[in-house]
Image 1 (tube, helix red, strand yellow):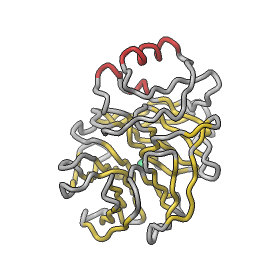
Image 2 (cartoon, protein in one colour; image 1 turned 90 degrees about the vertical axis):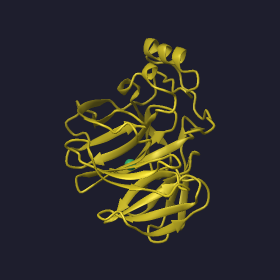
Image 3 (cartoon, protein in one colour; image 1 turned 135 degrees about the vertical axis):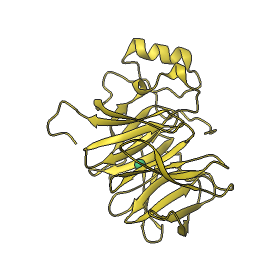
Image 4 (tube, protein in one colour; image 1 turned 180 degrees about the vertical axis):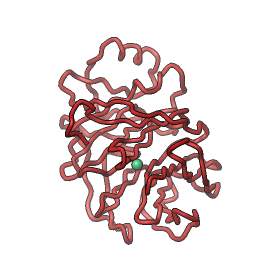
Length: 272
Ligand SMILES: [Ca+2]
C-alpha cells in the first residue's frame, strides 16, 4: 500500500549479519532492528499452503475451520473463502470499484470488513457472501479483530480503538507503546488468548500487545519467511489468523505465494 512511513520505534541490531543484508537491500523499509533485550517469541513453521499471489492481503480470519481472506486495491478488492487443506479459493466476493478492502473479522455468521478510506464497515453473510448491512466510522480503516466483547480496530497509527460490536460505537482507545515509544503502522489484527497480535505495516513482524495497557509484550520476527531480495517493497507480511484446532497461527503477506502455519514457543509444552 502506498502510505507514508513513520518510524515509531528504532531498535538495535541483534542478528547482525542477517539484518545487515536487509539494510543493504531495502532502504525503503522502516526496518525493525532488534536490541539484545527485545522480547521475541520463537516460532516454528508446521505447515505451508499455496497462497493466491493475486491477493493483496488485508485481513485473515478463521471461522469454523474455513479461512476467510480480504484483499485490497481499488478495482481488485475481494473477500475469499479458502480451503485450508488445499489453499484453493472456494468462493469470492468482488467489491465495488470505489471500495478498498481492509481488515476482516467475524461475529457469529457475519463477516465484518473494514474499508481503507470509505469510513464504512461492511457486514457480510459468511455463507452467501451477501452484503447485509454496514457501520460507519471516522478515519481510515486498517485492521480489525473481535475479542469476544469488543471489536478492535486499527487505523495505521499507534492507536487501537475498541468498539461496541452492535453499533461500532467507540468504547475506549489504547496507545501501542514499546520501550516508552509509540509503535505506529499497526495493521492487521488477531485477538486471542487475551492478547492482540498485530501486523506492523512495512515490516515482517507481529507485535503481541497487552490490550489493557497497550504495551507490546513481545515481537514475532518473521523476516525469514520470504527473502526480501525476491519481492517488491509492497509485498510485506500482513494477515494473521488463529487456528484453535491446531493451536497455531496462519500468516501470509500481500501477494505472497504461501500461507504459513506457525506454532509459537514450540519448545514450551504449555505454550499457546
Ligand atoms: Ca486476523
